[in-house]
Image 1 (cartoon, rainbow, N blue to C red):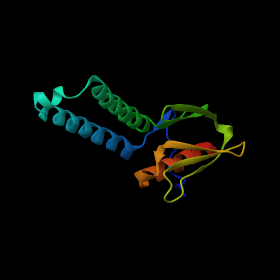
Image 2 (spheres, rainbow, N blue to C red):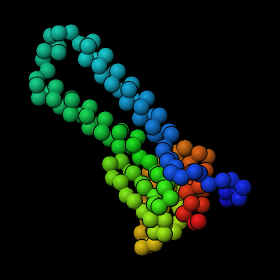
Image 3 (spheres, rainbow, N blue to C red):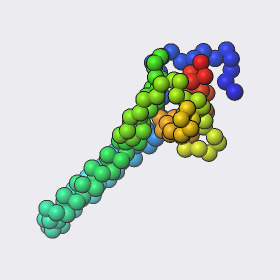
Length: 148
């Protein structure tokens, strides 16, 4: 339960996943460095054996890994006075505050789940359960904003 004395965040307010962003940047950068080092470690004869199709496949797989990682890193939840904007990967959804009847982050859940007035639920990947106490505090703040 949030402390009653805890102030609501000033709007507009954005929540982003911390752990996912750090892991995406760190491991994405490391993957790029390792692949580049491996490529330049090959001698000229070995590099010449790669066909244009094989090189294209490697570039395609690298771009695919980048777009997947970028989709996770760009996830966010933005609260404004009028609405809640949820960006999950490459999909953006906007909800009026009246549409949101509940905000939940159960123990072990990967991210916040919004209960909507039409009976459906919507994930909010911008608040990740793996962020621990930071995620719990963000879910409490979002719940208080939705309740007011």
